[in-house]
Image (cartoon, rainbow, N blue to C red; front, side):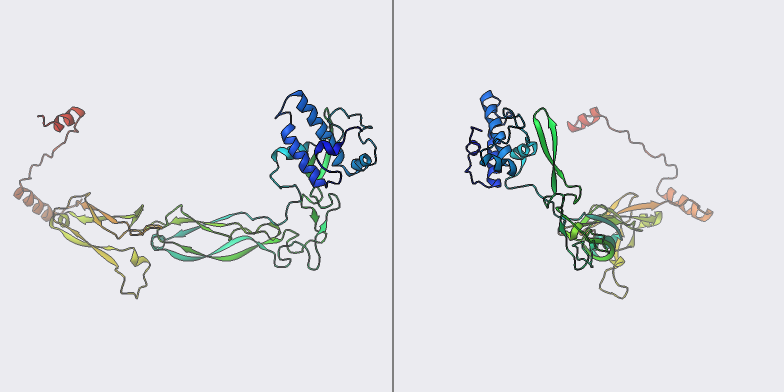
Length: 386
């Protein structure tokens, strides 16, 4: 061969395989036909690829250094050459800086896990600590995650010699296209376990039930998720655990309905109580979580219903709702008054109501119907029209 292949790549004759590879990657990025399609650059790219094909192969390099022509038998001296490496060109464009391919690690991060818990409304409002029983993958105690039987170790894969991948050569119009594939023997790890652990069968983890303490903050609601870092599935090979997500489901309450940070309640009173006024003791949410012997907790809120209160009116107690999640203050308690009209009256009750109607001039009530205002009516009202 008349061409100096070392000079073609711009390396010294004693360059290491890594230096040769780096030089080829640099030139391939500059000379690839997709980047520089002109004929002269393509010819230069073919020369660089042919030089790398020889110098990256130890047997061909030795033959070249001794003065032989390692490409003479293939008859591909004018083209890409025998052993054209498609993988190496892909590396030149897409491989990350310093990111050489190699065996993948056995220890990998585990998956995240999800559990759901149901809380009472008071527990969700004021926070609670729960102990959960979860079934997840944990590190094998016999092999401590290594996957081998006690006293043994992993061994280098004889198929790929520890590289984790093997070369696959296929002939094409370009010559021989060489691609790299994960080693089928070691599955890309570069090592094999000749004597797997009897407990985990070489995986480094087993399934087990364990207790996890969850501190639920005040103010959570249905659908909220709490993240417990490192409490999920332990990874293969004793790798780090994923996260555990706890999803909240708040149970129905007999008195209150939650709306954001507010608590909604309905108070039903007789017609006479609404007319004359009354006082109703509304149970507090704090009473649901307080100890029965505790005297410091306010167990009810007095709701004063003024005389003449109409059905549907709302009475608001400020600051007695749900504490705001990751915030300060609390929502409100909003009570809706429902006036109950008696459905059955005896003769004496009916006579008394009739007398009341006469006194109020309501013995022949006709009622009133309000006509919805149209656009023109609202327009006239805005300008004081009649």
